[in-house]
Image (cartoon, rainbow, N blue to C red):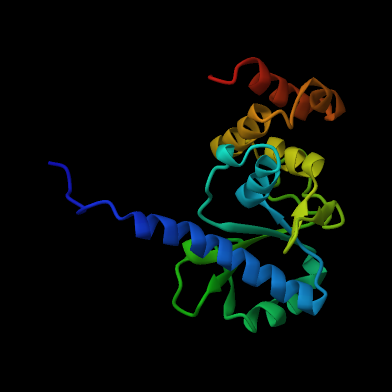
Length: 195
């Protein structure tokens, strides 16, 4: 028997998307004020790049991923605490909960620049210098973002890459600019987008 969840609430759906956006903007403003270099990565970075071409193709994301240098972690902890974020290291992950009792879903997820997210990954994360201004925050540059997505290559990374392909931000010249291991993954997505 299927569970009953009540009527669909458009307000709750819109609020969930806005919560993620506000969390990202608060974090970016705090890091900018403190002079801590960072870049927005993950689904929000993909959304920024896709929106530059076709805002109707933007996919919502449930969390905020940030790239920081490990040497900047302590200044980031201080800066983000002023915005109500609470640093935690949980199950090998560094995150900032959005309030003392917040869920890890309501958090900033940190990836460290120049370090591999997992030991088996092909390459480490790029440096925060591979970023550019996107108005109110810094976003990872497109080539670096594509490399990150190809390196992790989880299902959601593949979907993000397909979004970038779909709006023309990735083409054959992108494949040719990638290291062989990553180029093969990207070529497979271009050749078989529905697989």
